[in-house]
Amino acid sequence: MSGKIIIITAPSGAGKTSITRYLLEKFPQLEFSVSAATRPPRRNEKNGVDYYFISVEQFQQKIEAHAFVEWEMVYEGKYYGTLKSELERIWALEKVPVLDIDVKGAIHVQRKFPANALSIFVQPPSIDELKKRLQSRGTESEESIATRVNKASYELSFSHSFNEVIVNHQLDKACTDTAEVVLSFLNT
Ligand code: 5GP
Image (tube, rainbow, N blue to C red; front, side):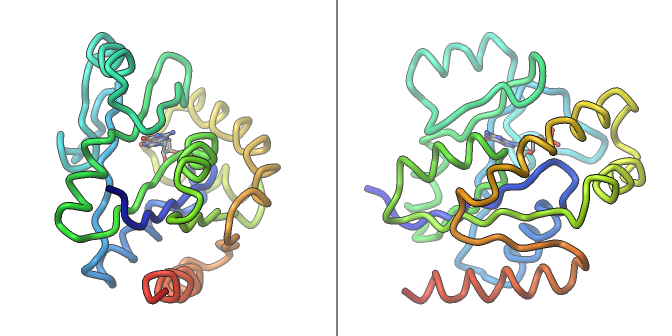
């Protein structure tokens, strides 16, 4: 059984997490799809809420057991994946999962559910602006920021692969633009 899926993707720091939070507050029929990840939790992150934080060994076991809809090594040595059980949990609640995932993962999910997925690419106004946002977030080292910025340039070239592109010049406007697209998807 599979229902609708909403995929929000973007380079890290483009604002997709803020937009995802806005959507989850606005539409009670949406539920955040909690991914499995092997990176350590940041301050304030909770297991089972932000991610299912698991070890690399546990992650590899799940790959072998075909437990993932998609998974990626998003950063060197750090795995992230969408669990089939998570989508099923949300569909069983008669809700629509919202996936906040990287660009490659988003392309995979979209291919698996071509008829049921709405994919939204959040585009930062520029690479410079993206770098500033990552620096002001204060959660990443300089090295991690450099990795994310390099990856972002590459990811921007895939924007045309998605159903909708939202340019995040101004977060409020990006949120309401996204909500409009989501509303029409939920109503079809
Ligand atoms: P962060 O470490 O900043 O929480 O996330 C890093 C990146 O991994 C973000 O772009 C996030 O959207 C992405 N990500 C989170 N969960 C998944 C997942 O299940 N699959 C994939 N492919 N990417 C994910």
